[in-house]
Length: 122
Image (cartoon, rainbow, N blue to C red; front, top):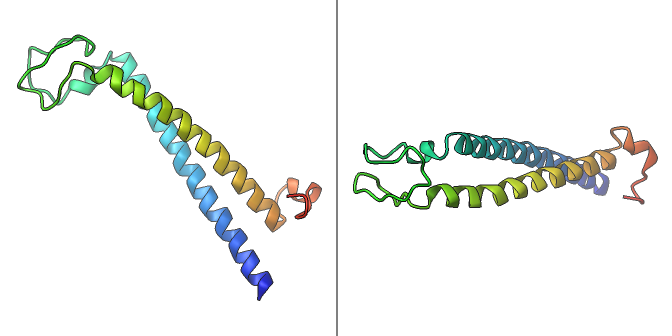
C-alpha cells in the first residue's frame, strides 16, 4: 500500500509539474508577444478601444478624453512596467516547474538521469 501511495504521489507530481510548465511557458510566450506588439506599435493597440479621433498616434503622448473609458496618459509605461516583471516571473516558474518534472521522472526511474541518480541522492 505504501509503494502504491508513493508511486501515485510521484505520478501526481509529474502531471501537475508538467501542466504548470506548459502553462507557464504559454504565459511567457503570450507576455513576450504582447510586449513586442506594444513596443512595435508604440502603444496604439492599448488605446484601440477608444473612439476618439483626438487620440494621438503615439500612446505615450498625454491626453485624456471623455471618449475613452480609462486614463490614457500613462497606459504605455504602466503596461510595460507590469508586463516585464510578469514575464520574468512566468519564465522562472516554467524553469522551476521543468526541474520539478525532471525530479518526478527520476523518482519514476524514467529518463537518462534516472540511472545516474538514485532516489537517495535526489
